[in-house]
Image 1 (cartoon, rainbow, N blue to C red):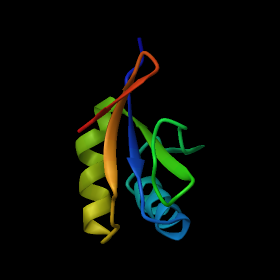
Image 2 (image 1 turned 135 degrees about the vertical axis):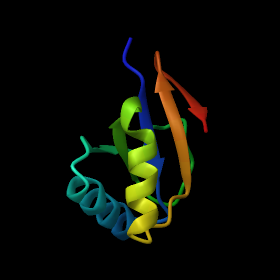
Image 3 (image 1 turned 90 degrees about the vertical axis):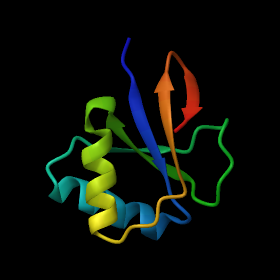
Length: 81
């Protein structure tokens, strides 16, 4: 069972800036389409391994990136953090 973290953003431009910040921090980030279960303005999310949650939050905060919400993805279900 793989548990991953999803970061959502207010718009695509912010999500792309977030990806750059996470990559610059050496994290294992992937871009994915927004899961249908989530409702937000931006159509993409950034996904990280759960082990990189705090490092991801730190990198995004340090870069001044606005995060709309954070979710834990586990067994096909999403849990807000």
